[in-house]
Image 1 (cartoon, rainbow, N blue to C red):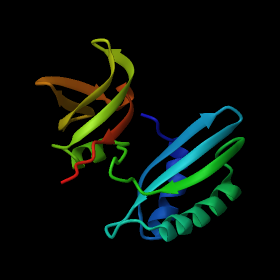
Image 2: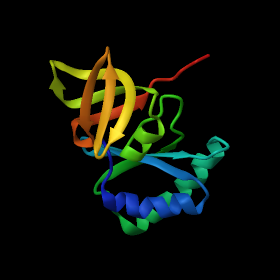
Image 3: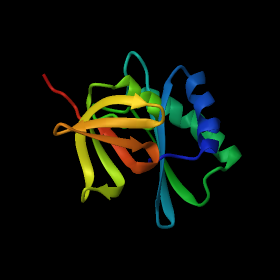
Amino acid sequence: MRKASDRLWSLIEPAVEGLGYELVGIEHLPQGRHSVLRIYIDHENGILVEDCVSVSHQVSGLLDVEDPVKGNYSLEVSSPGTDRPLFNLKQFLRFTGEQVQLKLNSPINGRRKLTGIIKQVDGDTVVIDMDAQEYRLGLDDIDAARLVPVFD
């Protein structure tokens, strides 16, 4: 999965939770000499721009002091949105029964992209049902995962 290091999680999670938000995930996306550090936050009442600004200020100061990301980077703080990214097994378990789009690290049956229903989490494996076929995937098999939004 496209996720940040354990060190970034251990630095950022207490700061985000201290402000009363849930840390959904962290992506570190290197792009040449400049990279993007994207933090997804959530709250039971939703996320407003002001929430993102508050977390950005808090985390930015922390990152300036600790300097865990080498080189130049842009810090982005965002809500997970309707196409919520999934970063860990706990999140896959939480959204069991929901449709998810996956981008795989290596092709399975010639496919790198799958869209299916999260059937279950079995130990450290995510079971996806796509076209009446089960795919058993470890987190290391998955490059990116996002819920498919449902609009009523």
